[in-house]
Image (cartoon, rainbow, N blue to C red; front, side, top):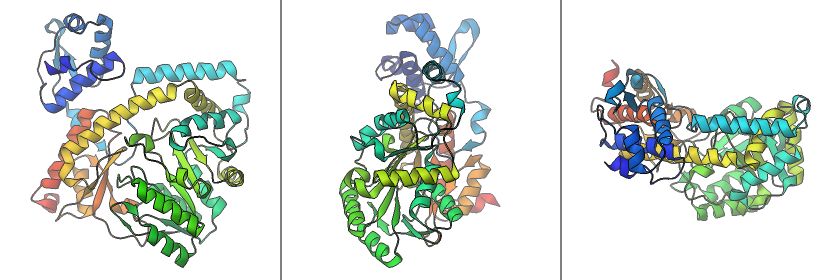
Length: 453
């Protein structure tokens, strides 16, 4: 049985390797509903591991709905439950949840360590925004793989990337100013520029991303001082800008004296680990990294490397105008998890699951994908005769929430025909597979929008 042969081939806790092997083999169709599994004792003997490890694996597989116990008959591959047809949110980019037991243990140990080394009263009072020295030191550990050595005087810690983006715009632009961007951008940027009265102007791009010549032309014509960049696993297009284009964009920033905001929440999800533009033009880039897309939205923390220490001071002051401080207890917990290695252990789990989910999307939706599925999402074409609106409505009738191209387009952007599928929020790979198969059925449906009469 191939699932047993491959059960210990991957990395990670042994019990999770067993569960993942069962799930992978179910996805390929080699294990089907009703198939009887070996007894726990027999499987432990065959794999040469403890019985308790196999018991834990079977408990987790039952929790995921992969197998079911039938008393003395043993354990069997479970049939699909009605819940798989219930509404599935494919519209919000959230990383898949790490193993619940491991997550609980790490949070418990981290909180205990924070309270052991900190004064509880100090964690419940006001703190200066921008992060404590310990927070900034922890931030350097997180940013080192992307940027190399980081100067702590240029670092600011914020309560999430959205606060960081808003504060950068407050500190470096004024009402009515132009901010340059791609033709499709993170919806949070649309919201914050609208709220602050800034004007987004899209820059033409090609299959490699934003065009440097167009960036320079629009910078001169519009008088813009700031450009928003999301070059790795772009949200929503999943495009990763190649190194040569990054270098060309860095030179364009330098020639035009532009400030770039490099929003890089998905860097860890790209297997190529591309060089950030901030590493090529550090004096012209605000580099924004967050734990929300890499580990969990609950660890509401973002790290910003600024172009200079003065820019960092200005950013910290702007942060105070909209968010006096991040919660000291959460900040301290994040720093503890980063410094003791727990955060990277969680990250490894998330990346492994996210990789399995993007592979599933590529397998089921390959002809419709505009780019290789990376990060936490896939970008698909809307086929004729569908429109964005009719396709989204048809997906809703199938119990699926998806994000159309109109959710990502600033005013003046080219009309797009596409939709983003977020892959992390589905409760399991089986639920995600069911949802993606329904999406694919809509894509290939010869009737198109006729089904909505």
